[in-house]
Image (cartoon, rainbow, N blue to C red; front, side, top):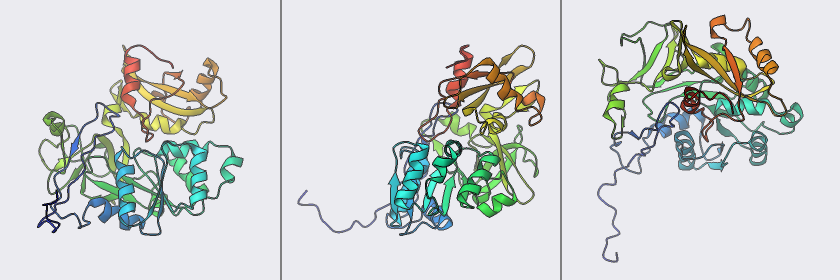
Length: 376
């Protein structure tokens, strides 16, 4: 309105986004963080304060994002790069060769990925991979899911020691980070806490010592989030005895030096004959099999053992799915995994349900098997 003053307001408090979780284990949840309590020109958000200095985001940054911005990490990392004056190169979907072409064309310095993207790029023919110059990349950030050790090792053999990993969530209740050098010293770790204090607890809520596997919590000074209009899920994500300890349902352990190693999501754990089986371990063992493009492992009901693991595989391009192939793929696990972890059966499918960021939407796959449907 013409009568409105153009004088700055006395106070211009900064807001905060309210994003929804990706819904890989259930219905997406609105993550409601408390208001930050500072002005719009104060760059005090955790992404600017934690990630920007850790990864060297500045005006010379050319950041490539292969995922859409309606997910937390692409949105927030893109916002940080934009805020510090860097350049964004964005793709509406991930294609392995197109990603390499974008890196070469735009001389990308920073990028962000999920492990599935690494696997797809590694499975390109050698001639295709070597045709693109990726030497401009000096920070390749990855998160969202545990990365198989062999996959990360092969990526660093190709791109050099530029892979930086962090562990966090849409809830941003805590953050761990690990540099390439640290990871090479402790393959498989997602790093030490950079926001919050790590607490690993058993089913009874008791904190566990280093080396023992349990539910991963972050302790903060105040509870960092609640789920919008969902008190029950907020309570389920909160430690029963410590209201500022929260979890997003991941399982793992810390070593004596405080480095976190993730095992899987609690919701995905298969209990077979009273023993915990973590699908991620099996999926990691199959990820780079030459006949496998994509793989997931879920638990199905069994009259004798309660549950047994079953593998679902999307064959590599040009590979014909046959019972013989299924047996060969499973046989490749002999000697690599304990016998009780090897899937009882392997089913083929045309495609696995993945979000646009590459996360496996395992609840959809589990529902398919619950209905007795095992294939594509």
